Length: 255
Ligand code: ZN
Ligand code: FE
Image 1 (tube, helix red, strand yellow):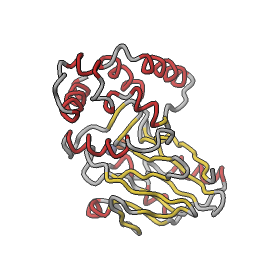
Image 2 (cartoon, helix red, strand yellow):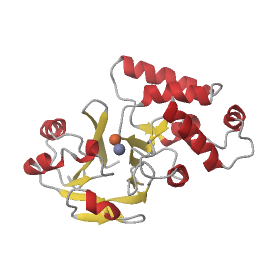
Image 3 (tube, helix red, strand yellow):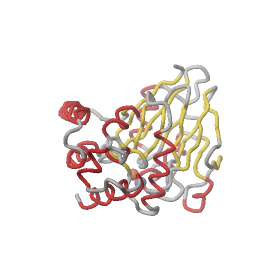
Image 4 (cartoon, helix red, strand yellow):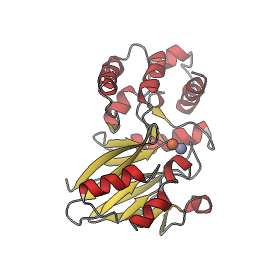
């Protein structure tokens, strides 16, 4: 592993991530909810910021960028399709593009749904997946701009990846997501086990993010529309996966 990862709590429930490549000394920041805690982490680690990845246009992911760049100039990477509403980009990327952080390769996925133009990035060798408000710990982002089918197709791209990947998502929403997940799949033993670990972490005020893709596949109801138990509970035995996903998303919105 040539990457070191730091999770930085920002605002009330956001996360930013710093990734440092030991070999090249490059340092990538993923999202900028606010500048101060990120500046502090850069001082404490002594790392020199080289790149900033913006996952999507929402203010709680970009609003610290300008202030941060004054003190720490860096290459800004974001979605080409969202350039009209993102801060100025130095590198505009689309689905299937790759960019380098030192020797490590970041692969870009379009994961539209929460917003149109939301991107996720995979560092395959390091097994690090940055998903922000697409795939989240025990959840997925609310559908502000895209359709349920669009989000489901976005999530399918991620479920096909190495289950050992660490899923670095954008918010600490996990406890609320857990309460909802139990209503969808009350007999899931892996879910109940995970919820115990989540409450232990939260009682110690520790982040539940990142999670592994494996635990999301086993416990996140939004990734499990094929589950017979879930279909039974929803009375949707003969529906398509994206219809079941849409029903789960709809129930979460009202939860
Ligand atoms: Zn968002
Ligand atoms: Fe967000």
